[in-house]
Amino acid sequence: MQTRIQKIDMRHPDAAVFREAAAVLRGGGLVAFPTETVYGLGADASNENAVSRIYTVKGRPADNPLIAHIASREQFFEMTEDVPAYGRALAETFWPGPLTLVARKKSNIPDWITAGLPTVAVRFPAHPAARALIEASDTVICAPSANLSGRPSPTCAEHVRRDLEGRVEMILDSGPVEIGLESTVVDVTGSKPQILRPGFVTVEMLASVEASAIVSYDGMGVSAPKAPGMKYRHYAPRADMTVVTGDPRRAAREIRRLASLSLQKTGVLATVQTAGLYDADRCLVLICGDRDAPETFGANLFAALRKFDDCQTEVIFAEGIPETGLGAAVMNRLKKAAGGKIIEV
Image 1 (cartoon, rainbow, N blue to C red):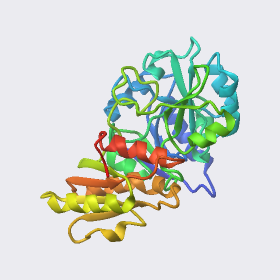
Image 2: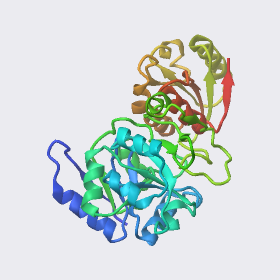
Image 3: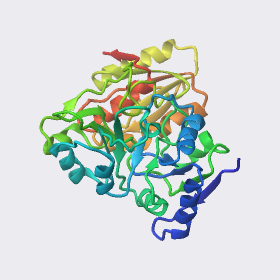
């Protein structure tokens, strides 16, 4: 299969490009497209064969549910039932944007969207290209991240090309994404909201709308995950990875010690504040972000993990950051990428 890569100038978007991509989707094809979080791999949610191809192309486990992308809040309520008042308030506050809501699905929502669950995960993205594609397609689009299952999520079209060229019909390229971390996922099926996956919409932001937000996103090993990223190792580089948490200088000292003992090609995922503490002649040092500006981690994290792969790094030691605000989402991704291997100092 030949994959067409279509560049989009978001300053002057060409409606014909989105019409063409929509035609691919309606014909049962797969289209990778940008969102404000990461690039998604889209299929027409009404087409079971097309949705099934997402699982095949990505090598995605069949019990890992997809996120349905919509173009209006009204579509969410057309797909769901028994949404509590706080769920409506979250939708009103954070949509369009990087928030996914998991709600009870209506009986007409097919199981192939939800991995057989009685709930459906729904997002109304803010990225103008994503919204233009959904509107041109005139359908709900199922879209996980546009990467091979378990690999670091794609934050630019080149990441998508490397993983999926020849496997999908089309890639829409609007350049690097803005956020670089997947959406926050919140379960709104109970009396209180439950955070299934942290993201750019932080616990503190959610609490400003609904003070009873419950944090419970360890996720690994759950039998029936309600949201992507809960059950399996995700975001992972090919190298063996360990996260070292604690005081930054103590963590750096421990990483230096571990790196000095390693006989393999070693990488260090550092911060702006600590990168100079490592021996760049001995190991590959990449900067993940600025501790004083957690939003910078989203722009760098997955690209850095892919860079380690490009350089055939065999062992990676990553610094942890405080799990407050956006740091909770960053640490969630680091821990999943490391398969839960954590050293506290």
